[in-house]
Image (cartoon, rainbow, N blue to C red; front, top):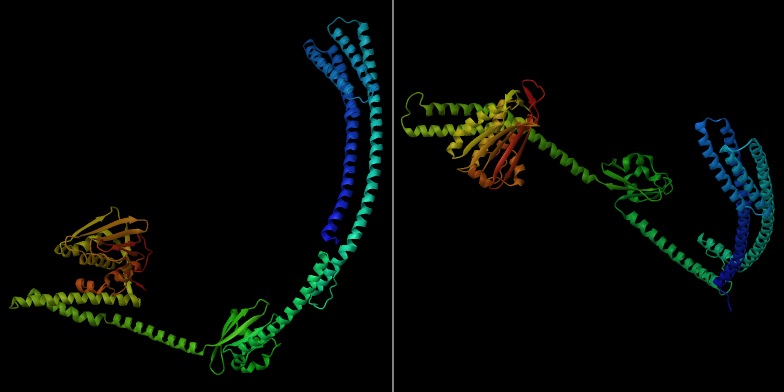
Length: 613
């Protein structure tokens, strides 16, 4: 019957387990016996000696207390008597323990004899302390003390002899157990060596041979010979290793063939690519460089061969793994470098000539657009005098006609025509003034004339100007100004223009029967003014558009209410020029609240300040 490796290991384990168990039992027995002897040696003789010496020490202390009592003051004698009684009780208890711990009859007899002598001496002492003793009693007390000390010496001597005898027994027992342990250990080592030799011959050698064969296969030596050794598990393992070797050999041959085919396809793909491709290894040497690279850099053809170092010129162009190079023929090439896992890298060169031409065209168009924008702003800024002068003349003559300064015109309708001319001229002047203000803001030539201003005065002036317009439209106009409003440093004309724009917008978009409220209060940021109406309102998404120059939320609204859409943008720009902010809260059908916040203190500036926007 074939014995498996499992059976062999189990048999060896049982043998070694039996040896180990025998050694363990012997060691435990030795330790237990040695411990018992040590305990007996300490627990009896040594403990008996310790208690005997303690009793002797207490007896000597009692004698000393008796001697002190003879010379002590009357009030100290009671304390000494109590002390001697306690010491007598302690001596008696220690001697009882010494007798119990004695390991021989002579030692126990000596302890009993000492205990009786101490009891007689203590009785005589109490008789003398009570005042009934004679000189003969005192002499007997001294002789008894000497006899007690001699008895203590005998007790210690007997007990010490018992300890020495116990020590000799313990040493003999330990020596015997030591010899037995050494003999058992040697026997166990011999048996273990025999078992190990048998296992090595039956198991370890074939396993070592198999391990050597596996190492050679792992190193790529696929022709190693593997010999089977029996039909147990090890034999089957070696047979499986032989089959594995043959399978690995077959797989390696297929893998090599596939790799060669893949490398060929890769080389063909790289060569046919419209991009320039350079593969570089970890030693900075070229592995592959396709023909497109040579077409980009004909001067480097001799430096692009496999094995050559990567050209320094290309390396300098690849700053931060990316670079652009203009070729001698005018073309542009973009180079990108990507790191590889083996420490090398791949460089891809792409022709970006068309992209560069498109970029140049876009830059030129951008420059033209910026130039046109600057020209527009300059044109609008320079049109102030040419537009204002004739409009002022039209308005002046219209005022003369409307006021009939030189007599009656003749027909009443002429006054109506003149009034229409005046109204249209003023409206046109207002529109042109807003346009010019926007142009000046964009060209950076708007000037602020800063001075200390009271915001409540500006609010009162603005409300007074628009009150008639609000009342004629059936709109209630109220205002609330907090007491103690701080001064602001501002251009009063510009801030008044902001307030008038906000109030005019509110009146324009508030229906008959509506309400407009103006509030001013002092906040941490400075001064906050809010204009709230109950007008048509607008969507939150439309607010940014309303703040753009010429912006209208809806063309139908523009036709119905009129206006250029410059009021809010101008107000926002003027507020921000003063270091403030403008915000809008609105909802359709629920009205609009426009809030401006101006700083109470602005750093000192020249009287005429040009602010660029």
